[in-house]
Length: 466
Image (cartoon, rainbow, N blue to C red; front, side, top):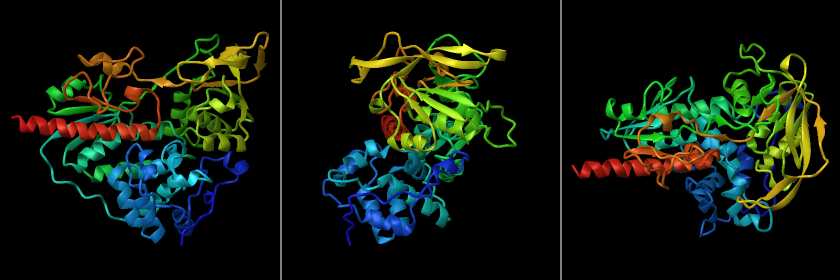
């Protein structure tokens, strides 16, 4: 029987005043009964508009129909056809601006909770199925993937399913890229990421960690000396940006990248961790994206009494997911909108003692279509803090572009690639944040998927022309 409720089934979660003191996952996920009830809200539209909003083209109505029937493993198999990371996407994908935004149920109420259902299906499979993915028959071709983030893992998985011998080269000591160093445990438990990686290894993907391509080996060496017929660069955008204001070099000023890497990858939040991280009492986080929300919420959990999000535009322009903003506010994070830092004040022992800011007003739209913030005259004021975290976005590390002959890049550092991921170098493909700059996990996955298809066409084409 159809469920015509105008609202989604609510997602159970820890109470805000409990979760802001621990790193356990905030939300608990649907039960089987709740998932089936939510699945019955789907109208199974003939035109399937939700699929048009999915960068990896999951057959959304089909998997939801299986959930409604109680066939959770069948639902998982449908998702797995298109996505190599379903448990990840169900947690961090911005469904509200993609598949759910296209849902017809959203016209007169809330859309079907597609993301929550995807998470439920993946979690059910991981808890109840012992079956490992079946390796494809080897096709005799080798492909290298640089970076084990969402773009690289997706590309590797899709190629492995086609029979390619795929080796992923990861610079850090653990596979997962931004999924392990950037996104906190309370949003994406690392055991879930490891499970997804293990599934790819079961498909035959080989993962080499502590391999900084461009330093240990070059892209040219991978192709010329190690026999890889194509290379996919999915190395992400890990180079942090700063404001170049006075005081940014003080001891207690972090980039969000460094702060989150210490907390997430290096487990600095654990009492017995050997990784140092400042447990400040008053923290200012500059920026308004998901990374800023993650940094602020981590600082709160590390014991900060006051945490401020300082953002130069208004609430309406916040780029972070609405759910993350709501969770941050519930946890006691204070938002300072239309506020821009101009200097960080120095206190004792080279530490920050506060941040001088100015109030902003929104003027005419800029090139991005958002109204440009301008300084309100005579509005300077100071926020007291003993730590500052800069969450202003990132750009690709220049190491690969500087060590790869003939690889064309944008002025800001991104690799130039077409929609299929083909770069200016024959046999070298790229996608995700390394091409676009910092974006979402699901868009990076979409790029990895497109590149895998293009690499397959490229290698088969060369084989046919021999």
